[in-house]
Each structure stands twice: as structure tokens, then as C-alpha cells.
Image (tube, rainbow, N blue to C red; front, side, top):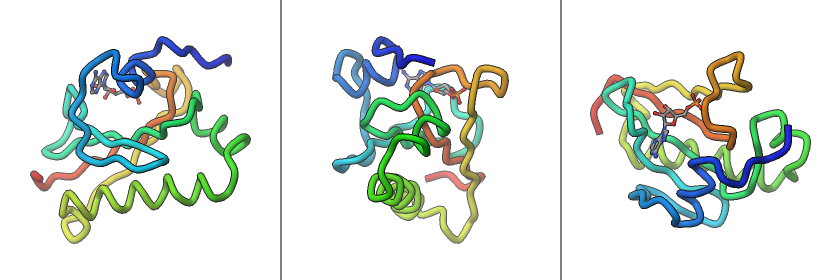
Length: 113
Ligand code: AMP
């Protein structure tokens, strides 16, 4: 699937749609999900244009994969949900419920942050 540069997360990353980043580094940003499905629901969104996890694993280099996965952990640490526990969910493909065709990691916890 070709990357759609007008998807909502591409617009957020470009600054076309305002969003409050709770975390940002060279590789990814994180912001609260607009329709939270848990007490804490944050999205970690890589800055580069990957449609989904398959695209990422086939095309990102190892340094980028490592950095983005560290970002998921860093954001969980920043949210102070490591001890409470949390889920990391990645929907891959419309058939699995992926609505936004830009790779993102859902971080969900029953603990408020
Ligand atoms: P998925 O179904 O895995 O593609 O998840 C997309 C997620 O993005 C959903 O949980 C939406 O609530 C969330 N979402 C969509 N638009 C925005 C937005 N502008 N800001 C924050 N979250 C959003």
C-alpha cells in the first residue's frame, strides 16, 4: 500500500493539525489518543512515513527500529505506568482495525497518568 501523505498523523507531524506532544525525539512523537480506550491511552508515532508495522520492519534500519521501540518504553516510563502494567497494541491493516495508515503504537494502561 502506498503511503498517504494526507493521513491525520502525517498532518499532525507536519503541524497542519495542532496536537500536544507529550514526548518527542528524532525518531518519534507521542500524544494522547483523542478517543481514549483506557485510563491512559497514548500513541507513539514514528516521524518517518511508514504505513504499518510490516512496512517499518521491511524498510527501517535496525537503529531506527531500536530507537522507536525504546521510545515506547521511555513514554511508558514518563507516564509512570511501568509498575502498574500496560499494553502495547499495533493494529496492522484495515482488516485488524487500523484506521490511520501511518504506523503507531497504542500504549494503554488502567492507571491514570
Ligand atoms: P488505529 O485504529 O490503530 O489506526 O488507531 C488510530 C487511533 O488514532 C484511534 O485510537 C483514534 O482515536 C486516534 N486518533 C485519530 N485521530 C486522532 C487525533 N487527531 N489525535 C489523537 N488521536 C487520534
